[in-house]
Length: 137
Image (cartoon, rainbow, N blue to C red; front, side, top):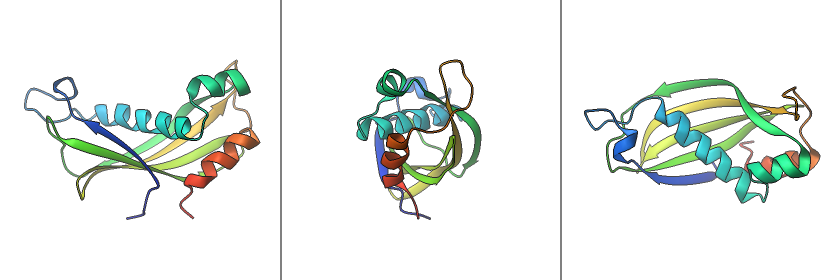
């Protein structure tokens, strides 16, 4: 277990669950996406600002998930995010979902930096420097 520096808190709502009150597995991807967006916002470069100022966007290019325990209706969760690696045009993040001290889900997510026409492009230096503050090394 690694100390992941960015924390996004959320509550599980009825819409997030299946008929049994358990979080539907694909919704963890939505929770992780929100957490990554809030990480960007915390460095002053939310998704809109990144698009306008730099002409780029981010897309998930790969994601590996390990489900350990289920979250349930009305649980308070934390999505903890850290930057594992910054490449020329990619950022690899580790994301974990917790309920209290219980780790429920682990994700390894690689993000690609894309230009306005959807082609990979180098990360702007300002973004690279800002996200490196969430690094795990």
